[in-house]
Image (cartoon, rainbow, N blue to C red):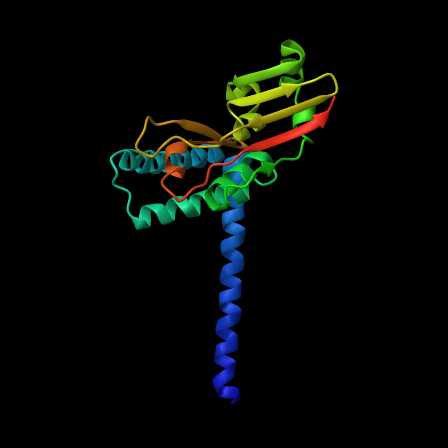
Length: 214
């Protein structure tokens, strides 16, 4: 029995070691391309952006012609789930909206107001517009990256004591329509993600909102 199980235990040990090494290498690579600005990290980042953005554009062009197959859609789904996981703590509102759009049931989604009520961009916009119903309001990503990753455009209902930010019907650009992209910013890494690709999956539109007291 010992002669049978000892090699198996040894193989498992080697597999665990290889897995740990792979995780360490991938983590180091991820930190390097997103956080460091030395020449080597810059080289890695530029090439990573070139390869990933090129492949995403290839899928978007293929989708616009109705040519996406099951494998392509599986890759898109994996990419979306990876994006949701990666942005969970950086862009939590956008992450929840994306997941609910692809894997939700179309029910109303309420977002935490923690960020919205502190956003300088939103505070200025609310003061500028005053009481009433406003929208749709579009913004440049550079004005508020986190807000733009969640709601762009957005609508506002402002009263003396209360604010609601919302979108009545979250729907991404159709896969065979005009290409619409969002810049996905993860540290120093920039990826151009096409909204049209999300619509290639079985999605559900929904109402999303967040509200707080002034």
